[in-house]
Image (cartoon, rainbow, N blue to C red; front, side, top):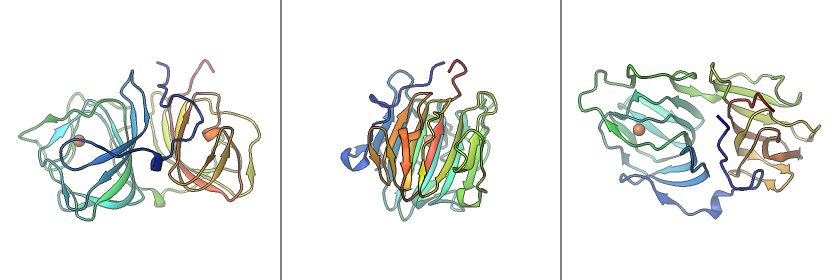
Length: 251
Ligand SMILES: [Fe+2]
């Protein structure tokens, strides 16, 4: 399957301040769609959860995965576990969740899913917290909660030698992966592209790309063969979240 095309013009800048908030569901959550593929239903969005938010309170599951990187605030599940700024999680399709979700202080997050998140309700859940249904099948597994700051920075031969990455999740079957990237100040490109289509969002610093300059919060996407953001250089360094689709074996 070819990777979805998340934005109309690869390597262009999608800036959240230029997008209107839209309602997501009926419980006060709003979002700004950053990337979207009409054909597959893939959506990557900046999501705002209001202060005092209380989810529907009914356990449910979806036919799409939910991949989340928390930017600010916190979300509580079951009154005990907190997802806080800097936490990452990957919840596959067919995982029952949402028994009791709240956000006392509100939260913002980057949320990605590979299809519509229609609620399929489970009125009598088998367990008090998240659990997989028999139909569960996902090459990344269920990553309940990962504090990204605790993941070691490593060099990775798939990236320029100066870059450091933190692996967050990897699909063991098709090689799709999500990483945090650190590009050092003064880096300049040597001219190789990614072997996989990608999406990225800048968390801090700045990067100069082929088509635009990128600052904190900016998003872009591109096909296999292009570098992340079309990066040419980073004067002061930067950090970003990078979502890589399955490598294009033909590229
Ligand atoms: Fe849900």
